[in-house]
Length: 152
Image 1 (spheres, rainbow, N blue to C red):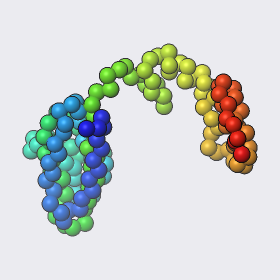
Image 2 (cartoon, rainbow, N blue to C red):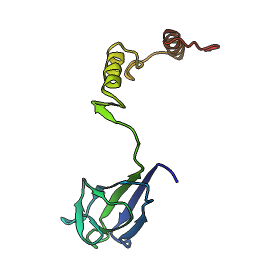
Image 3 (tube, helix red, strand yellow):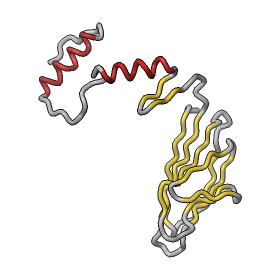
Image 4 (cartoon, rainbow, N blue to C red):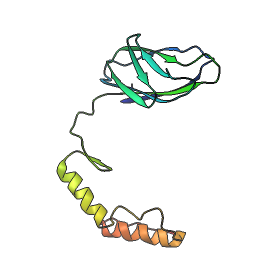
């Protein structure tokens, strides 16, 4: 059993729309996200015949057997894309700030310091040759106390 499960479902309105997903008991996080849908005003997903999740919305579900029905007009033109994301608990602290996700505030602060010093690599918009990139990587590893042999 893996610690994360990602199920992507893409269906058209001409296909049967009821799905069953068995979620492992250890996966206490279950999220259903309705990424897209077209074909009418009632587009979305019905969950266990009791809740409705519209397009561009998500629902946090209880672990166990999940049943959901894709609701689209039966005109043959609509389609829906749904993501079902499940996972086991991480078992440690998670701290997020901006684009950084770490285990503590101290790690977030250090990541911000490293980023402001330019120690997280060059931005992608710089155009450098392969040889310049090799030197950049070798210099970075040297500064970090490593060292790369035969960088040619």
